[in-house]
Image (cartoon, rainbow, N blue to C red; front, side):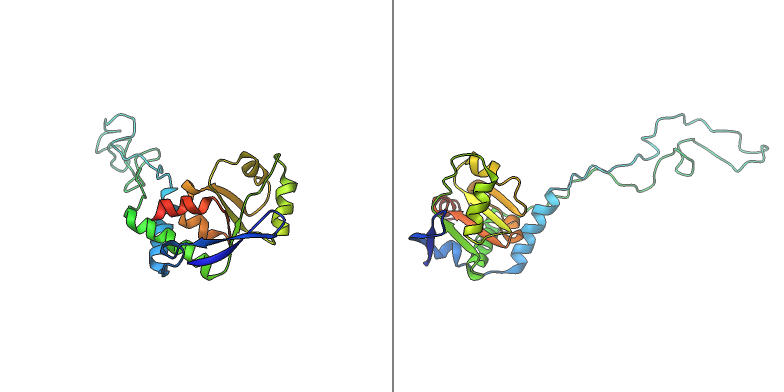
Length: 206
Protein backbone atom coordinates (compact mmCIF):
# COMPACT_ATOMS: atom_id res chain seq x y z
CA UNK A 1 0.00 0.00 0.00
CA UNK A 2 1.13 3.52 -0.78
CA UNK A 3 1.56 5.75 2.24
CA UNK A 4 0.67 9.43 1.96
CA UNK A 5 0.88 12.28 4.41
CA UNK A 6 -2.31 13.70 5.88
CA UNK A 7 -2.15 17.48 6.13
CA UNK A 8 -4.25 19.94 8.08
CA UNK A 9 -5.60 23.24 6.76
CA UNK A 10 -2.33 24.93 7.76
CA UNK A 11 -0.34 22.58 5.51
CA UNK A 12 1.21 20.71 8.44
CA UNK A 13 1.57 16.93 8.51
CA UNK A 14 -0.68 15.49 11.21
CA UNK A 15 -0.60 11.77 10.34
CA UNK A 16 -0.24 9.23 7.56
CA UNK A 17 -2.78 7.11 5.74
CA UNK A 18 -2.69 4.06 3.50
CA UNK A 19 -3.99 4.03 -0.07
CA UNK A 20 -5.05 0.46 -0.96
CA UNK A 21 -3.13 -0.98 -3.92
CA UNK A 22 -6.31 -2.59 -5.25
CA UNK A 23 -7.61 0.89 -6.09
CA UNK A 24 -4.66 3.26 -6.21
CA UNK A 25 -2.10 1.01 -7.92
CA UNK A 26 -4.00 -0.21 -10.96
CA UNK A 27 -2.23 -0.44 -14.32
CA UNK A 28 -3.46 2.44 -16.48
CA UNK A 29 -4.84 1.74 -19.97
CA UNK A 30 -5.71 4.85 -21.96
CA UNK A 31 -8.16 2.93 -24.16
CA UNK A 32 -10.34 2.10 -21.15
CA UNK A 33 -10.19 5.68 -19.84
CA UNK A 34 -11.07 6.99 -23.31
CA UNK A 35 -14.08 4.69 -23.56
CA UNK A 36 -15.53 5.80 -20.22
CA UNK A 37 -14.79 9.52 -20.69
CA UNK A 38 -16.40 9.41 -24.13
CA UNK A 39 -19.51 7.75 -22.70
CA UNK A 40 -19.73 10.48 -20.04
CA UNK A 41 -19.40 13.30 -22.57
CA UNK A 42 -21.89 11.96 -25.11
CA UNK A 43 -24.40 11.33 -22.31
CA UNK A 44 -24.57 15.11 -21.88
CA UNK A 45 -25.86 15.55 -25.44
CA UNK A 46 -29.60 16.09 -25.54
CA UNK A 47 -30.13 14.64 -29.00
CA UNK A 48 -33.27 16.73 -29.52
CA UNK A 49 -32.38 18.19 -32.93
CA UNK A 50 -35.16 17.26 -35.34
CA UNK A 51 -36.79 18.37 -38.58
CA UNK A 52 -40.13 17.48 -40.16
CA UNK A 53 -40.47 15.18 -43.13
CA UNK A 54 -43.17 15.93 -45.70
CA UNK A 55 -45.48 13.59 -43.82
CA UNK A 56 -45.15 15.67 -40.64
CA UNK A 57 -45.70 19.09 -42.24
CA UNK A 58 -49.20 20.44 -41.73
CA UNK A 59 -50.95 21.30 -44.99
CA UNK A 60 -53.12 20.06 -47.83
CA UNK A 61 -52.05 17.29 -50.15
CA UNK A 62 -54.14 18.79 -52.97
CA UNK A 63 -52.29 19.30 -56.23
CA UNK A 64 -51.39 22.98 -56.46
CA UNK A 65 -52.53 23.39 -60.08
CA UNK A 66 -53.29 21.23 -63.05
CA UNK A 67 -50.50 19.28 -64.66
CA UNK A 68 -50.57 20.95 -68.08
CA UNK A 69 -51.49 24.22 -69.68
CA UNK A 70 -50.41 26.75 -67.03
CA UNK A 71 -46.84 27.30 -68.20
CA UNK A 72 -45.55 26.40 -64.74
CA UNK A 73 -43.35 23.46 -63.89
CA UNK A 74 -45.44 20.54 -62.72
CA UNK A 75 -46.08 20.56 -58.97
CA UNK A 76 -47.80 18.29 -56.50
CA UNK A 77 -48.19 18.76 -52.75
CA UNK A 78 -47.33 22.04 -51.03
CA UNK A 79 -45.50 19.89 -48.47
CA UNK A 80 -42.93 18.74 -51.03
CA UNK A 81 -39.28 19.13 -49.94
CA UNK A 82 -38.76 21.13 -53.13
CA UNK A 83 -40.98 23.96 -51.90
CA UNK A 84 -40.40 26.61 -49.25
CA UNK A 85 -41.90 25.47 -45.95
CA UNK A 86 -42.02 21.88 -47.13
CA UNK A 87 -40.56 18.83 -45.42
CA UNK A 88 -36.87 17.99 -45.14
CA UNK A 89 -35.30 14.97 -46.78
CA UNK A 90 -33.05 12.90 -44.50
CA UNK A 91 -33.03 15.63 -41.84
CA UNK A 92 -31.98 15.12 -38.21
CA UNK A 93 -34.31 13.24 -35.88
CA UNK A 94 -34.38 12.81 -32.11
CA UNK A 95 -31.93 10.19 -30.94
CA UNK A 96 -29.91 9.09 -27.94
CA UNK A 97 -26.13 9.37 -28.15
CA UNK A 98 -25.61 7.28 -25.01
CA UNK A 99 -22.84 4.68 -25.10
CA UNK A 100 -23.36 1.77 -22.75
CA UNK A 101 -20.27 0.82 -20.77
CA UNK A 102 -20.31 -2.25 -18.49
CA UNK A 103 -20.30 -1.51 -14.76
CA UNK A 104 -17.05 -3.45 -14.30
CA UNK A 105 -15.33 -1.34 -16.95
CA UNK A 106 -16.56 1.91 -15.36
CA UNK A 107 -15.26 0.77 -11.98
CA UNK A 108 -11.91 -0.27 -13.50
CA UNK A 109 -11.57 3.10 -15.25
CA UNK A 110 -12.19 4.90 -11.96
CA UNK A 111 -9.39 2.89 -10.33
CA UNK A 112 -7.10 3.72 -13.26
CA UNK A 113 -7.87 7.43 -13.02
CA UNK A 114 -7.09 7.46 -9.29
CA UNK A 115 -3.93 5.43 -9.88
CA UNK A 116 -2.77 7.93 -12.51
CA UNK A 117 -2.93 10.70 -9.90
CA UNK A 118 -0.76 8.63 -7.55
CA UNK A 119 1.75 8.00 -10.36
CA UNK A 120 1.85 11.72 -11.18
CA UNK A 121 2.16 12.60 -7.48
CA UNK A 122 -0.77 15.01 -7.79
CA UNK A 123 -2.91 13.54 -5.03
CA UNK A 124 -3.13 15.22 -1.60
CA UNK A 125 -4.98 14.17 1.55
CA UNK A 126 -6.33 16.64 4.12
CA UNK A 127 -7.83 15.76 7.50
CA UNK A 128 -10.57 18.41 7.31
CA UNK A 129 -11.09 21.95 6.07
CA UNK A 130 -12.67 23.16 9.33
CA UNK A 131 -14.54 25.99 7.61
CA UNK A 132 -16.80 27.56 10.22
CA UNK A 133 -18.55 29.88 7.78
CA UNK A 134 -19.21 30.21 4.07
CA UNK A 135 -16.29 32.38 3.03
CA UNK A 136 -14.40 32.10 -0.24
CA UNK A 137 -11.37 33.90 1.16
CA UNK A 138 -10.90 31.32 3.93
CA UNK A 139 -10.91 28.41 1.48
CA UNK A 140 -8.66 30.30 -0.95
CA UNK A 141 -6.14 30.82 1.86
CA UNK A 142 -6.16 27.10 2.70
CA UNK A 143 -5.55 26.16 -0.94
CA UNK A 144 -2.81 28.79 -1.20
CA UNK A 145 -1.13 27.31 1.88
CA UNK A 146 -1.30 23.85 0.31
CA UNK A 147 -0.04 25.29 -3.03
CA UNK A 148 -2.95 23.74 -4.90
CA UNK A 149 -4.84 25.01 -7.93
CA UNK A 150 -6.78 23.44 -10.81
CA UNK A 151 -8.23 21.14 -8.23
CA UNK A 152 -10.89 18.49 -7.68
CA UNK A 153 -11.89 18.20 -4.01
CA UNK A 154 -13.54 14.97 -2.87
CA UNK A 155 -15.52 15.03 0.37
CA UNK A 156 -17.37 12.18 2.06
CA UNK A 157 -20.28 14.34 3.20
CA UNK A 158 -22.41 17.28 2.13
CA UNK A 159 -20.16 20.03 3.48
CA UNK A 160 -22.21 23.12 2.65
CA UNK A 161 -19.55 25.54 3.86
CA UNK A 162 -16.94 23.90 1.63
CA UNK A 163 -19.25 23.62 -1.38
CA UNK A 164 -20.44 27.23 -1.29
CA UNK A 165 -17.03 28.66 -0.44
CA UNK A 166 -15.55 27.01 -3.54
CA UNK A 167 -18.18 28.25 -5.99
CA UNK A 168 -16.40 31.49 -6.85
CA UNK A 169 -12.87 30.10 -7.12
CA UNK A 170 -11.90 29.35 -10.74
CA UNK A 171 -10.78 25.82 -11.70
CA UNK A 172 -12.03 24.30 -8.43
CA UNK A 173 -14.76 21.67 -8.12
CA UNK A 174 -16.13 19.97 -5.01
CA UNK A 175 -17.90 16.61 -5.25
CA UNK A 176 -18.97 13.86 -2.86
CA UNK A 177 -17.50 10.39 -3.14
CA UNK A 178 -20.78 9.18 -4.64
CA UNK A 179 -20.25 11.55 -7.55
CA UNK A 180 -16.59 10.71 -8.15
CA UNK A 181 -16.08 10.07 -11.86
CA UNK A 182 -13.32 9.48 -14.39
CA UNK A 183 -13.85 12.67 -16.41
CA UNK A 184 -13.52 15.04 -13.45
CA UNK A 185 -10.46 13.23 -12.07
CA UNK A 186 -8.64 13.53 -15.39
CA UNK A 187 -9.88 17.04 -16.14
CA UNK A 188 -8.26 18.61 -13.08
CA UNK A 189 -4.51 18.59 -12.52
CA UNK A 190 -4.69 17.97 -8.76
CA UNK A 191 -6.86 15.75 -6.59
CA UNK A 192 -7.52 16.62 -2.95
CA UNK A 193 -9.14 13.94 -0.80
CA UNK A 194 -10.66 14.60 2.59
CA UNK A 195 -9.22 11.75 4.68
CA UNK A 196 -12.61 10.29 5.59
CA UNK A 197 -13.52 9.98 1.91
CA UNK A 198 -10.85 7.31 1.30
CA UNK A 199 -12.85 4.64 3.14
CA UNK A 200 -15.94 5.54 1.14
CA UNK A 201 -14.00 5.25 -2.11
CA UNK A 202 -12.59 1.90 -0.98
CA UNK A 203 -16.08 0.66 -0.12
CA UNK A 204 -17.41 1.76 -3.49
CA UNK A 205 -14.65 0.25 -5.62
CA UNK A 206 -13.65 -2.88 -3.67
